Image (cartoon, rainbow, N blue to C red; front, side, top):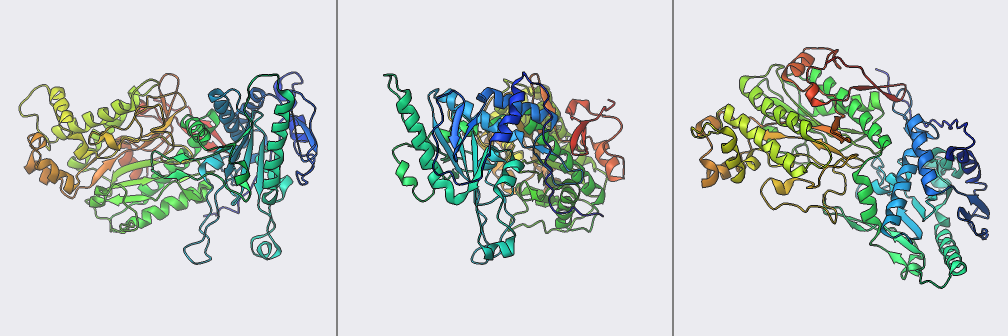
Amino acid sequence: MQFMPPRLLILVYPLLCSTTSSASRWPSITSNIMASTSSPNNVKKAPKTATASTTAGYMMKMPPLADKRSVAEQLCQTCSGPIYSQGLETFQVPMALYEVNRARVVQAMLEKDSSAKGLILLEGGKQTTRYDTDFEPVFRQESYFHYLFGASQYSDCYGVLSLPEGEATLFVPSWGVETETVCGPSPEFEGVKKELGLERVFGVGELKSFVEQEMKRMEDDEEENKSGETSSPPNLFLLKGMNTDSGNFATPASFEGIEKFKTVRDDDTLFGCMAECRVTKSPAEVNLLRYTNWISSMAHVSVMRATKPGMMEYQLESLFQHHTYTHGGCRHMSYTCICACGPSANILHYGHAGRPNSRLLTSNDIALLDMGAEYHCYASDITCSFPVSGTFTEDQRAIYESVLAAQVSILGKLKPGVSWLEMHREAFRHILKGLIKCGVLTAGGEEDVDKVVEEMLDADLGAIFMPHGMGHLIGIDTHDVGGYAAGTPQRSTRPGLKNVRTAREMEEGMVLTVEPGCYFIDPLLEMALANDKQKKFINADRLQDFRGFGGVRLEDDVAITADGCENLTLCPRSAEEVMDVMKGGVWPPEKDVMPELKRSWAVCKEGKMEMLDMES
């Protein structure tokens, strides 16, 4: 097997031939953005024009924000301009994707306050060490910082984005001789600027003077532009707010001397605007997520084919990581791999320190593998369930197909305006119907099964067998931000529903996981058997057959489109597909036997995603 060489960054420059469109101004921007990499001291004041700004002793003429975004979107469509790639045939990410992100954030800030001006300041991720040692875990960029600057490989940086111009400046560390001897040369400013497609790059040591001078310039500009109306001074916008999914807080940037700006510091505005921008994805972001789903789907198939009784769960984890890194350039996983086989699947986030994927597989197990790789900080989150033996037993297939029915039903209903909470209830309905069909639950002689299922929902019985949320937003983070943002429907207090990670209505551009599941978790089953409203629906004798069964979960990543959804995940899903692949069948298949899953068949060729013409 050929292994991936060190990271390769390919720089491709746009071919823009029109002299009349907004795109024609782009070459002058890229050529004039960094006339010098000198210190930003002695800033010269620019003449008063709508598109002029100055820093580092030179003048840059920038296009209007809308034009910048338009050019960036064109570069994304053609995969032109600076490109990130891990070499070989790994996906090529146009760095213009992050220019689009920056334009979106600036626009969101201006929509919130049309007179907003100042500097957005973010602090990037730090290279940490393990406890009291000098061992450095593999660096992963802070997500909000990556969203704006795409600087996945640079630690200990700062980034500034100007309002309302949307000009981006990155500050990278410069190392001394001792560090350079160990870690190589310090980042070269001009090279980083070209690599990331930014307007300016300076050393971290220049941050304080840059912020002071830019804020002073904006204040001076404001004084000269005053015409009697009341106006506010420029603000220093910092990122501070609670991630409603984790309960953790984003920490605002800090540097020596920042206290000078305490009167114009704004910790309230930026977080909400950025989180809301991240809720919906640009077409370029969706295409990047299509890649992470493609490589992770193919890795799941590879693991399915290799799985045999007598293996250890951690071997399945290792095979997945090997495939996604060797063939996809994915150094990071999106989250800790869950390789839960047999009763291990009773633990929803199996694989943690206390349960480190350490069980021996048996021929009677059904495997639940929840694994997803990350590429350039964009995630995938995919779960496959399959029989370790390669053939479903009658009971395994009954549970599997009830979960699959839930997934198919939800994919058929997803479109803008649909309530995510209602999709969660839809998953409950199909799982409860499946449990009635296989005898675990009883309709008590009632012929109207749908009526009985609604009674079961009223009794919160669905939460016993599916105690997690039906899915979540996904993007730069696996559990992406904005699920319970201000002004959106708030979290339910009902069992089951309170675990749903968002209650929002669907919007075009959202990307979410669809992950119905059915589990037999002893503590929850005992609670149900002791609950008068729930135990009347349970066939206790038949339930015993599923003690120790574990569970089944099927999870796909889905993009909401204008009139429906697109399934980015390309895993075997029908029972026949699963068993055929485990016997060595071809994948992707020649024919799509389940078009109702809305799988968007694609493959990565020469660094680009190509759609397949799949027969159905």
